[in-house]
Image (cartoon, rainbow over all chains, first blue to last red; front, top):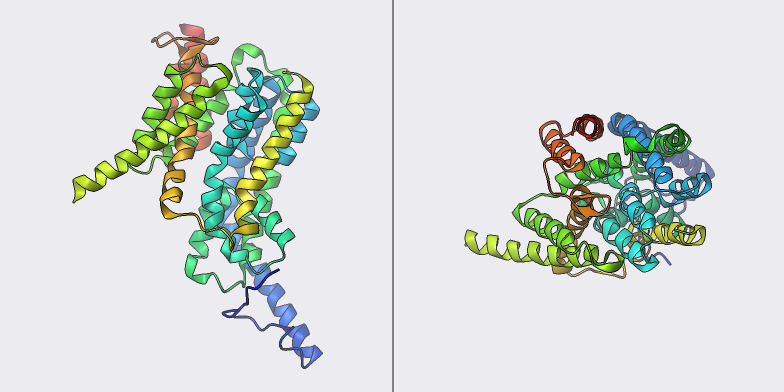
Length: 265
Length: 107
């Protein structure tokens, strides 16, 4: 399955070096210590994000219940989906009886950034068996993307030491914080009157996530065009306006890119 | 929305999470996205977000409402400005909800 060899591995490999059991045992202890230290380093780097992740989890929990989902549906969604912005995006569609295919496509589009993220992170874990790659991929969200490539740039791809420890530290605590927040939100939601419109907090969260994505003039053009098309096409059935808006918005961004490049020349 | 559709939607969302997040971890060595496609895909998430956010801001009860009396529109703009200045996610949610509540009661 895995042809990747750890050519640049800095730590001794007990499987190759197995002349003496002692050597292997010492190497295993050293390897464990490296991962443990990396875990502590990752925790120190990312701990400050935990309160925001938990609070955002609370908002997601409330938004799920307020959109009409039951307690068990909300719990199942948060514990398995674990993709906040896709959940926020899909909730109004669920409430509006949107066809399942549009719901799926919407989630795919909102999650597309993870494809870009995982293209950057996945090569660092290519030496692991497939089930562990799926497992780590599942946790590779916005927070891990903010920390992992900074600590392990692309040129460290063949040096696995410390990566699993670091990655677990920037992922697992965030998962727990998010889930605890979401469960609190799910349980509290019924105490909050409808008129407070708590679901609007989800839209505000999306605004705050979107602004940093507007990295250049072309992205801005894409956002403006997409938003305008979505509003203009609001009466199209099945929320097709959303998909139309994304496609036209992407095209606008690419055209703006070409235009900006020409200006530079 | 009936319960069955909600459960199917949850399964579809899990599938979406797995495809987008774990797909490259599984098949990354076999697939090489063309740079141009990668480039275009980079703009998709922001465009999708805008296409979700704006229709929510400019409607009240499903009807278009682009007015200074629409609390969601004003609070959304306020929240965006707040984020641009502070770069703080949680603060933006709190400030935006506070502004929304004040406007909802005042307008």
